[in-house]
Length: 252
Length: 252
Image 1 (cartoon, rainbow over the protein chains, first blue to last red):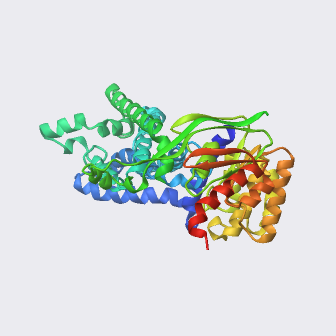
Image 2: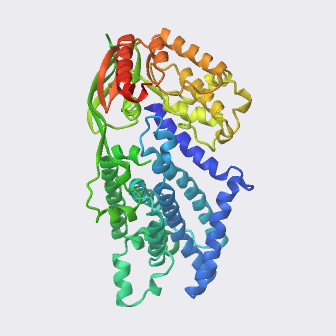
Image 3: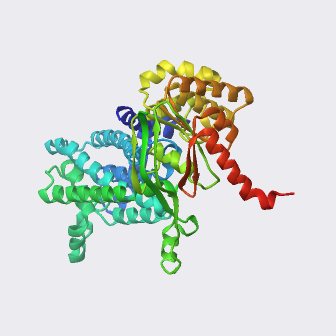
């Protein structure tokens, strides 16, 4: 079992390596790519939100860095079990190692993006708040949410190979209808208020935005909804995985 | 006889591939399909014990359940019913193309697959020169596996799994790979392992080879054990059955 856990570590490392093997900028691309993406989005959406660019970039980075981790990890984890046949058809290896490896590889990107986020705060002279000390806990909660969602998707994808575009569309809708992109004030009126109250993504985003941008502690309701989402998704994923794993082999 | 591997009332069933869905679209279309998906019994209540140091051959016609049985022994397929007890470390070598990630180099694959075979990275490092030497591939170890020929692939895979000194080695129709020189070399190594007390289970259609190599044959048909005993006796009965079933059509 010890060496099987080593497989998990080596496979995660290899996934990170393979992504950047042959890329002319190598691992530097890991920093440049999210930074360029976020700067461009910041530029566009500061206009949409009629905000000051420097102010909006900090707001956007605070929500988008964890969201990109969630989105990219979900996408990578979705096909992970189905494409693990190269190993699982030949050797005894728990199927959940493959979504876990993808999660690990994406976590590496997330941590690099997180450092980029801190650099952006410095560049745009944003304030450093005491509340930012809570961020490692926020990362853990996002990790839990992502692990649960990714595990569910990886199991479902084995049986329904056409769900990927549906998932991508769903994620895009979730992103553009949440406070990750838009400041709460933009979604005004009663309907907007109700939407912000029932949309769990707003609570997830608050775990980063409140300490970084607003300089306040996330509320208990933010932690509660986010933790409940993570635990709920992980329990659902585990139930799906345990009840369907004996069928995986026949769907490769 | 000290048991190395025990199977108790093992059954493996799966849905007929023609009615199996792989997409959400197919699944929705199948809602209106009144045909009940047929369930195929790949293994049906198989119970057997393989003793330490035994060399066992598995025979049967195509679709008899031989490969499924080997994969259950390797804990690759999870049976629907029954249980497997492995008293020793099982090392499977089941098919070409399985186990090696095509984008990774031979060296990286040795480390990765080594962990699935129970080797720590340090132990793989210590044995890597021997693995490469036996496979005659020292100069290609840092080449991505996707650039290997099927012979090179087979040589490296065979060299790796036999270098880890398996206690129970499972082989599925792969001894005919590589050139004649390598075939002889691999069979010598296999005999060395048997002499050292390794338990081997071999699936092959080459009855003469199995009679020469194995002291016991298990004959499977439609997922059930038809005969299990001394290699020469089971081979004789199998040939007699084949002769009878081929008789009317094959007679001049």
